[in-house]
Length: 323
Length: 251
Ligand SMILES: Nc1ncnc2c1ncn2[C@@H]1O[C@H](COP(=O)(O)OP(=O)(O)OP(=O)(O)O)[C@@H](O)[C@H]1O
Ligand SMILES: [Mg+2]
Image 1: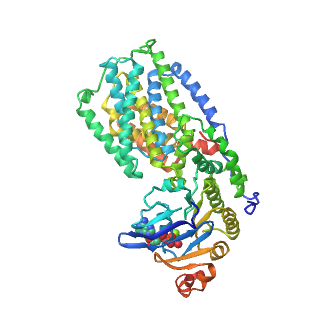
Image 2: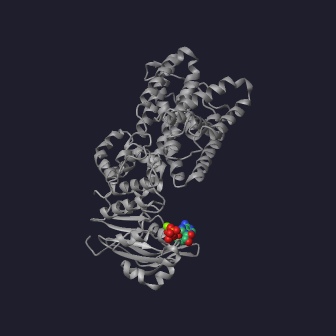
Image 3: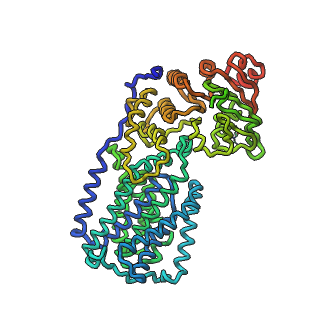
């Protein structure tokens, strides 16, 4: 087929360079390892839980183009289930976390099947509606403790040996859970499945015309995202030894949108940096009460107006790397 | 599988809220030919394509592909049978590289790709084939460029490379040269000619010189109906066609 041979001297668009991810990952790893000696372990553990939550959320919005506005459901409910099974059933922490994640997975299958056929704003609205339904259920149900939540969740011994009562042990276990989730998401994104997801995000009609049954791929991604959000929520219940209505209510769904947006949608590290910034801000500004919300609103506006790609997204674009 | 016609429609009709966009179209596309579908703006050509590839559901009528009734299949199934379409507006995956664009199609050879636990490097087996397709459309220098950064003509070239990656038995091209300059048009026309060996092509095209050079048969559509059919000479001499189509600025 020679007829289409073309001179290729003219325009030369700059290509994307490789190598950004390993460097960024090494930096992140070093920071996580050192963090408990520099700042409060409990604070960093919360950051890591929210980072995993945001990474899971970002898997949908950033790599499939699906805006879920109900991710608090998986985060918050996994938190409840983990807290309940650890406290009332006496499950060891690893099983309690797994049970919480499994519950989130189940919720993801149901909610995903209902929402996946809708597009854009309708998809967001269905995910929100289902999450609110489950919020009211959490508010009414006996075992969730209503307004009080579930308090005094035992941390217990991981695998029967790691005493999570020790703050440093708890920290590194949390870090390990986060890193496992993070690497799993990396693998998902850079798998044959992930390639199809990106194609769907970029142009769903085209993906269909190439023979992909896109609904099935989207559902699978939804369930993976919900499950990982569940792991994050369940881990948080063990870390903070409690589960509460806050984590299952709609502002939490909004917060994870903000975290991912600030860090950079569709970037690997964006949600992690976003979680760090938002939580640090909440912590620093906590004495100013409602002003936290104003600051968050301002950040949101700034992101939308100035840094469309989010912080990590802008950096990646500047250096022409993928992060 | 060796009947004379690859694709046949019978009384294919599509109504949008009372408005008939495609009306009783009986189309027969002969195996191994380039068949052009032409007609003024709004004639229903794209709607026809959407019906044939099941992006729209026909109000009435049947579609047969290799003798098999495909009227009730899903769009993804149609592609799997070997009928792959392009879109009127260029359809690439903008933020994937040129190589990744083509590989998405090649990856279809694995069947479903639900294995999220495997590294994407298992797809490297397709790189060689992808590069050869990319070179066929003259994009070798852009292998790692994001599709969004390609100029329009090259995007269309990439789209064709992606489509060809599926090695489809039948290609549906919706205005492959729309919005292109002369050089790009010649390049794409040559490419279409080259790939038409051992496949069937149905194409919507406004550029009449491309149509006359490439197509074996032409169907003229106006207001959703077939107005005339035949080779370029027959069609272009048809007074009704001259009035309805050529008279509207395309002569
Ligand atoms: N989804 C839809 N809903 C309502 N009307 C539609 C829809 N799609 C197409 N139409 C109408 O059907 C008619 C045929 O449109 P179509 O896009 O098939 O024309 P076309 O022949 O491809 O035109 P062009 O040369 O401009 O691409 C037009 O009048 C269009 O407005
Ligand atoms: Mg059209």
